Amino acid sequence: MTVGLTLRDLSAGYRKHPVLHEVELDVPAGGWLAIIGANGTGKSTLLKAIAGLVPHTGDVWIGEHKASELGRRELARKLGYLPQGASLPDGLTVTDYVLLGRTPHLGALAREGQSDVDIVTAVLGRLDLSHLASRQLRTLSGGEQQRAVLARVLAQHTGVLLLDEPTTGLDIGHAQILLELVDTLRREDGTTVVSTLHDLTFAAQYADRIVLINCGRVVATGTPDEVLTAQALTEYYGARTTLLTAPDGSRVVAPLRGS
Image 1 (cartoon, rainbow, N blue to C red):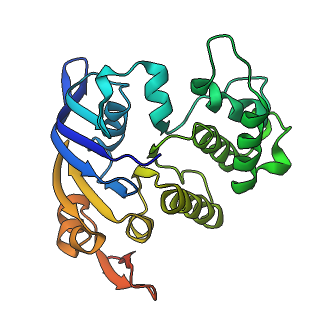
Image 2 (tube, rainbow, N blue to C red):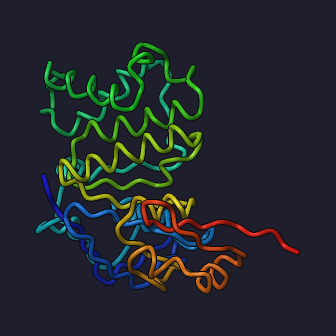
C-alpha cells in the first residue's frame, strides 16, 4: 500500500484556542517527513489533527481520499498513529495488546485469524519483543512498553504512519533499531512516515525532508541540510550548536557549552 499525504490550509486548536495556522505540506508516497521545533510549538497537535483527533479546519488527503470523508475504521486501515504516553490497558499480555492493531481489518463480530496472529508474531520479532510476548504490559519497562505500542501500530499494516516522538524512553541502541525498522518499512513496503523527533541528528539521518514549526506555523521546510542550519537552531531553539558531517554524509547537530 503506497500512498502520500497532503495537507491544505490546516489549522487546529483546543477550545477555540488556535495552535496551528494554515499548514500546507506534501509528503510523497514512501517519504519520511520529520517535524521539528521547540517544545510547545504545535508538533504533536499537527499529528493529532492529521489523525482527526483534534478539531481542525482545512483538508487532509491520504492518497486520493479526503480523511474527513472516511469512517473511523476505514481511516484506521490507511493511517496508523503512535501517540506520546499512550495509555496501556490492564490485564493484557503483549501479544493480546498488539493484536488490537488488527481490529480495523476485522468484521463487526469477527475474531482474529491465523493470518492476524502471524502478522503480530512477525512484528514482535522485528521489534525484539518475542521473548516478552506472554508478559503483562504493566510489567514491562518504559522502553519495552514504547516498543509494544509501536508494534500495535505496525500491526495495522497501514500506508501512512504518524509517529509522535517514537524514541521516547528508549536507549540509543533500541532507538536505532526502532528507526531502522521504520526505515525498512518505508523502503520495502512504500510506507509513508511522518514523525516528530526531538533528536535532531536522528531527524537528519532518517528523514528525507524536515519541516520546522514555530508558534504553530511552518517556518522552514526542505532537506535536513537546508533546514538544520546554525542560524535556524539559534533563532528557533535558542541553542548554541555546531553542525558536523557523519561518515555517511548526514548532518550531526552537536550542542556547545557556554563559555
